[in-house]
Length: 501
Image (cartoon, rainbow, N blue to C red):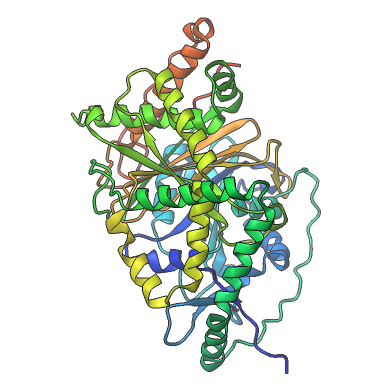
């Protein structure tokens, strides 16, 4: 009989399980919109069985999708074990909007599905095939626990399930033979052995860093500076704002799109990177949000946390989290968007030089050596001491069309989860020449989420006008949005912002 096999979660992956609380699930999600294409059935529905069979045929390439969590006794450390009761019917589900369903209704459905936690006794993912969407379209709402993926591995996963060509032949499902689940004693014994070896592993990692450094003295000083900067930031609590309060269990999910080429034109005209431009747009949106709440933005030190991938080239295609973070002050008190962009660009360059992301990653790696009790206590209390007001993620996706069994993906709107005292999260993903924004908000803290989305578009339009004053002057006015969440009255809002080419 083969011996027991399992995969251990890293400290970072484990923290996403430990951070999860009732009413605050920690899965990443997205709403993908497709044209009906060859998946359209004669009765007007969508062939969800074909989608389910296609996903099942790819699972041998994503073994984590057939594994569940098991906990090591006497510790709070989890491992992945094969699920001997795996059932694809549970994970790929089928639902419908009332025909003809519009974008407004899809957002409300997305909010309801995304706010529900995943079953911890099963593999931590779900896909909902949603038919009934107007204009011959359907949607897939995807949920994957954050302990399984980060943004970059999420894109790798998308590339696994979808195809770069419309021609895709159905494939047969590979036979799944679950590996034997280890006993509680075996898990505990292996954990004790691993801890005894950890000090040597940490020393080896440090030697690797020193051997790879082009200028050891410069890089060590830079790393030390980054560690000091990271620790200093983490000890500085974020100031209170209307979006930084205790959250409830319900969510509002809204979205919009921007033309990626327009963002690049802003970058070429005004300077900075694409990420700098995006953060400047967020700065303008936050500024407008606070002013609507009668709060002076100039009196608040507003900080964002933006994840930074530290995934090596040979780690692409692997699930799990290989991500660190930057903590960045947003100049929301500065009225001139050009000055906002200059300040953000300067701070971004400082962070690159300081190696803050590498330092934060090293601290995360050191958590592997920490007591499981200390790790659990830290995870449970971290939301009380958040050093940032907002999370903003920006993940590059494929810049060409991709397909689900010949049905072209048109749009993809990502979601970043919320934790206590973090009432809003902003996620972006670029795809096929567009930048798609997803806004996840606490239902009660941000009843005016559509106004925040509208303010984001206004901030982008203002930057575009500064970059291209003559072209922007002749651009059409962007209509206001309505409420994009459950129970919201009114007609379907227009939520697209496409820069003028």
